[in-house]
Every structure is written in structure tokens, then in C-alpha cells.
Length: 64
Image (cartoon, rainbow, N blue to C red; front, side, top):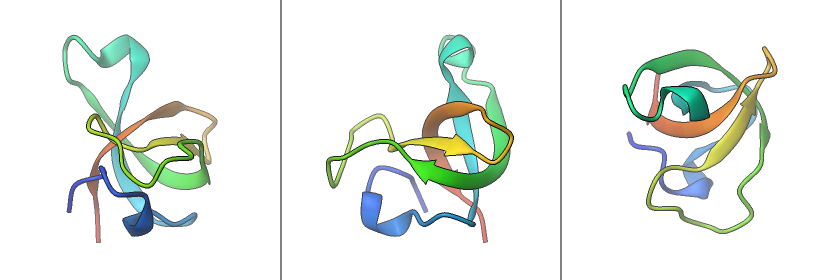
């Protein structure tokens, strides 16, 4: 599942995000969602989240 809809993302789920510094390369970082930072219901580049590790990025994929 992709991460463009806020309704699909809940604190505690595992996701792959792209960090700001990795946007050019597209390198993905795996982690567990702590906070959802995007207020709108959708975002074309992915919903912005903070992981439990403290890293902030946009969700590219939701893992099961």
C-alpha cells in the first residue's frame, strides 16, 4: 500500500519513508510511525511522519 492517504497511516505501523536528504537518491528508511505530521487527508508525495527513531520523512510504502 502506498502512503499518500492519511487514513491508511496509524501510529505503531511499520513503513518505508524517504528522508529529505534522500529525496534525490530515493533511498528508503524503514521504521515505526510515532506521529503523523501532515494535516491534510492526502498528499501526492506521501504523508509526512515522524518515526520512533526521531527521523522525519514522507511515507512511500506501508509494510504489513
